[in-house]
Image (cartoon, rainbow, N blue to C red; front, side, top):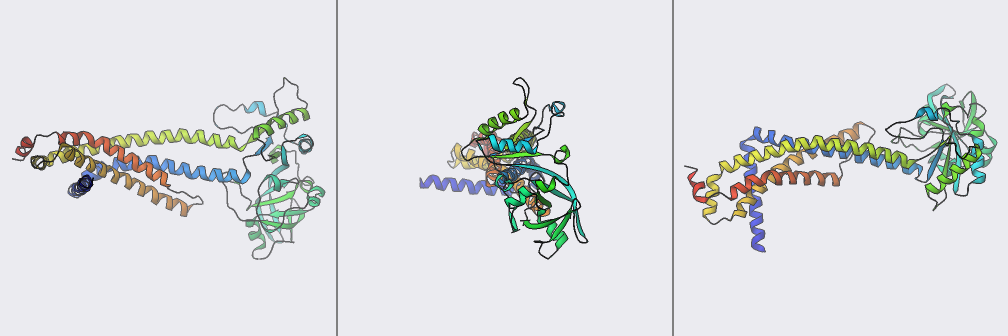
Length: 420
């Protein structure tokens, strides 16, 4: 066992030295050869790195809503393929009285809320913020969607039901119109009406879908319905329903479908004139897009890896030819065929791993640039590093086997004579 370990270490050392000497002696040839492996690994692993980062951000965004939340809306969510929009165009939008019916009839729901959105200018004295996202919500919104309030509080039941002129504002709005002073207790103007600030959202930044509470003003729906049309489709009326613990989305969806069909008095043969959307639709949609692009990444990377593999095989054939006499001497001194084979095979693997490592270094540098230059965290995971190095090792193994095998089969006498 000890002798085998010694042989392995010796093989590794000699292979490393020979490969390093080949790199030094033939810089241009080596660079051109390794560039194929480098580009191939960069193409494949960079695609997976972006996908993993996007997937992580998508999951974070979805987790903020919860996977047991359903959206009753006019338009169904869909990705790719045919989208028969003309079938949905004449559908009615969700209405607040339908929320009341769901609350009366549903046994599977934990909480439900009615939501509409708009964009308006928000003012405080001479300061203003344009294109602020106005979100009007009914009671229990905080039970359906997770919200984080840094200062103040959420609406009380009497404020929500009674339609009091109160508001919760985003961090960016608070900073832009109140600067370094507290926003709590002050009156902002929205839709030409004053609303008293009772809370400020915690700063969070945009999620994967471009949504954020930072530029948001939340109002009670019974206040907002006096200043905006909550049945206007442009305000995207939606009913959001959260299931009870241990109630599946399918159970809740089936129940909501029955309630909505009853409320809208649809005949048994009639199609649904509403959509019940869930976050898993977005996840599945992104997964199908990612799988398609990942295949493209593998195809692009495969071409580069094939070119790089042929390049490494070429270097190894040249290396075998240059060291034929050395091989003959080694065999005449008792070196076994497997010793010669492993020596050249390790050298090919070393060169391939070097090319793969360069590709991973470039990707890592790119992740740092993207992370610090843009509002998006891009990270190179250990899984992707392992994948990149594994692919490099396999390419080196395949590309180096035939040259190494031919070297191991050389006749020692003929090999020594070839040097004369």
